[in-house]
Amino acid sequence: MDTGYYKFYEKKFKILLLLLCCVAFCVAGCFMIKDTDSFYRLVGWVAIIFFGLCFIKLCLKLFSGKAYIEITPTYIQIDNFEKLPWTDIVGVRVFSMDGTKSCWLLDIKDVSKYKLTFLQKINSAAGFTPFYITLSAISDKDKEELKRILKERIPQNNLD
Image 1 (cartoon, rainbow, N blue to C red):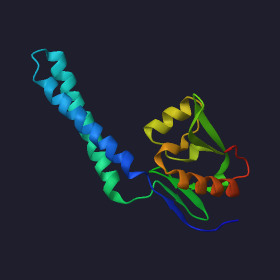
Image 2 (image 1 turned 45 degrees about the vertical axis):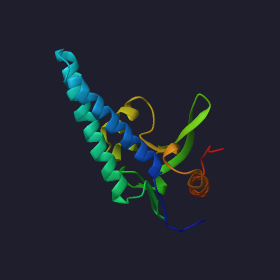
Image 3 (image 1 turned 90 degrees about the vertical axis):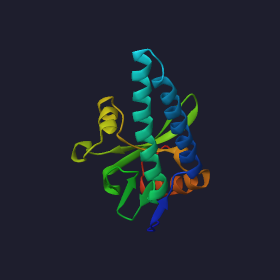
């Protein structure tokens, strides 16, 4: 069994593209608030506030240098989720939509002992696992390395 420490980072190009989209929607919001209709002004302000906050969050993510996935001999931590001990993970499944593998779902023994974010609570309430690895966030080379590590450490997996 591999006992190394690994860090996998998000693709910077993807974050830059999302930043560009946030700027475009903020600019569109600025044009909307100049309209005479109060509904369009409201939508414009909502767009500016929402995409402005997204822009700030993405800038923090781009310049933080924090790894998207951190793996140690005792745990795995994905993005800003809690650290998951390897002993709590009972399996890994592939989630596919329209034939495209979009994420790996980590099945956990007892989800109730973890502090979940709002979106994780929604996933859990819908019957999905709240812990997942988004495959579009990491490079293909990193996907293969991560797949190898997960296959070694988690006996119940369906990553092929």
